[in-house]
Amino acid sequence: MGRCSDGRQKLIATATRLFLERGFTAVSVADICAAADLKKGSFYHFFTSKLDLTMQAIDAYESEITALFRESLRPGASAREQLKAIAETFRVRLVEQCAGDGNARGCPIGNLALEMAGRDAQLRLRLEQVFDGWRAGLARIVRLGIERGEFGPQDPDRAADVLLAMIQGAMVLAKTANDPDVFARLLEQGRALVLPERAPA
Amino acid sequence: MGRCSDGRQKLIATATRLFLERGFTAVSVADICAAADLKKGSFYHFFTSKLDLTMQAIDAYESEITALFRESLRPGASAREQLKAIAETFRVRLVEQCAGDGNARGCPIGNLALEMAGRDAQLRLRLEQVFDGWRAGLARIVRLGIERGEFGPQDPDRAADVLLAMIQGAMVLAKTANDPDVFARLLEQGRALVLPERAPA
DNA sequence: ATGATTCTTGACTGACCGGTCAACTATAGC
DNA sequence: GCTATAGTTGACCGGTCAGTCAAGAATCAT
Image (cartoon, rainbow over the protein chains, first blue to last red):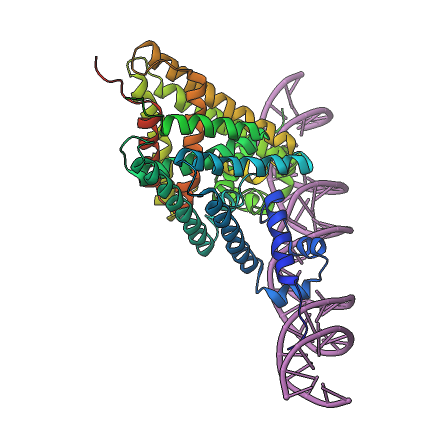
């Protein structure tokens, strides 16, 4: 019943892009509407507030990354290859950002976290959930690698903690340097240190 | 000649605190002036713009951290102790932030970087400089540790890269979890992996 | 004391902010 | 083809934004 529209998805996609480019606070609802070619009234038909849209944008981004994550979890690949594939996915995204307008924008979740975690408790908790999910995914791969003998015996959750921190830290430094290579170099170096090749026996 | 005032320092200190709490964009010049008990006219007597103030606040913060850095470089301490002291300094700051209002605010430089690096080229370059300085400081300690035989032979600049990424990544996750312990745990774990104790010969 | 200089004040500007609303239009089910 | 519903529109709200300005007050060198 009634008419139908892709307005909701268009607004979410547009907002995700604009937030990544300029941050939550610096992007106005009017900016989002203009870029999505919709009026403000439509915006508030779909969302109760700018924060509501943001929460839904996080949902969408989490789903997208989860899908990519699953792809890299192909059974044939070694644990090390899977970790490399994840790093490579993020690196390619940074390069694409640069190709678009010459700026490395970083991670939507990390960006939102540093800008908003101290300002909205609900948003902070949601971002924490996303990180928890990623950590769990990384831990699964590390556990696999340990079982297969690729990595030495260790606590996979702890290793995943460190890997996630490395990824987010590399994002901060790559965005600051405006250079995706910084991300790639840090991740490669970090992987080598956190999960060294086992010396052949 | 003329009257003198601590207005400039007061505005810088106030802005630094407010930016750390809420971010650059969400803090208005009026907010800063109100908290510093000065009028907007005085603000624009000392600074040409909000960004100008921000640049000067970065200068001040960099000096402060450099001083703390030097303290931890006491000749008596081992390289590992020096690295621990730096991590401990940041951890104590996070705990203090929490004690104040229950929120871990993170690193002023990292926060500004993710919020502003894509929006102002000058600011981005300045933040990159700050990170470069910190990286150089960390590399100096690692080099010392290698010379003293505390750490295995390796490229100290690369190790410093990874350490800095770990620090910033740990800040992102600690702020998102609103828990300084997350920072401490990650840094401890990271240090152990990046710079393992040399197996006694 | 006086005049140059530094700082302070408060009123002001035009643009923009997030959010609201009532009227309107297109569509789907009957 | 009617009607309930979903989506659209543009005008509108009070408040806030970064930044300006002219005039005055405090302080210094002389």
